[in-house]
Amino acid sequence: MAPHPDDEVVGCGGLLSLLAARRRATRPVSSVSRGTAPFVEVIGVTDGDASHPGSTNWTPERLAARRRLERLRGLRHLGIRAPVHSLGLPDGRVDSHERSLVDVLSRRLRSDDVVITTWRHDGHPDHETVGRACAEAVRAVGATLIEMPVWTWHWARPGDAAIPWHRLRQLSLSGRALEDKWLALSEHRSQLTPDGERPPVLFPEAVDRLLRSAEFYFVPEPSA
Image 1 (cartoon, helix red, strand yellow):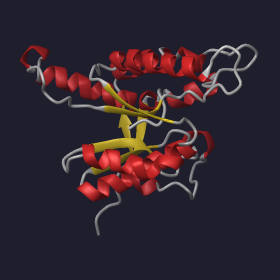
Image 2 (cartoon, one colour; image 1 turned 120 degrees about the vertical axis):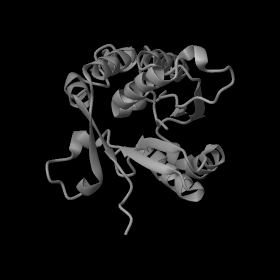
Image 3 (spheres, one colour; image 1 turned 135 degrees about the horizontal axis):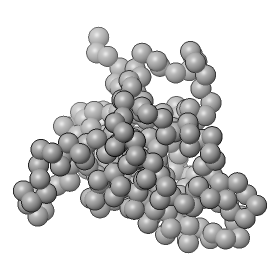
C-alpha cells in the first residue's frame, strides 16, 4: 500500500522486480488463466496531487492525472501489470481518513497476505498514517506486515535510537532489479524535473539515497 505514487518504487521497487522475475520463471504467462487473482496488488492511497502547492504549471487535477499515469508506467518496468486500486484520499490529509482506511484494507485482506507499506514512524504524516492503518488491519485478520523506511533515510543517523535496528532487514538487489527500479522511477517526471524556478521534489541527492543497491524493511517484532 503506497501513500503516494512513486512510494512503491522508491520503497520496494527492487523487491517487486525480483518477485515479478520469479513469477515469470515459475509460472509462464501462457499458463495463467484469465480471472486469476494478481500475485501483487498495488493500492494507491492518494494521487499525489499536493506535491506542487501553488504551482502555475500543475493544477491539482492535472497533477493527479499525471501521477496516476506515471505510476502505471513505472510499475510496468517492474513487471507489475495488475490494475492499481486507487483510493483517491486527499494528499497530505490522510490522517483524517485513517479509520476508513483501516476498514477498506480489512475487507480486502486475507490471513495469508503480506502487506508492504511505509513505516509507522517514517517522518511523513501520510506515510505514518498509512503505516498505522495497515498495522491495525493486519492485526485484525492475522496477515503479515512489512514496513518500508522511505523518508527515514532523509533524517536518520547511524545508530539513531529512534530506529528499531533489530527489526531491520536488508534485501540485496540484482543488477536487473536495480535497473528496473531506476527505469520505474524515471517515469515519475513530475517529481524529477524542476517546476519553473522551483527545484524538483525528488532532488538528485534524494534519488541517490533511494536508489542504492539494497532495500531495507522492518519485519514484525520477533515472537516471545
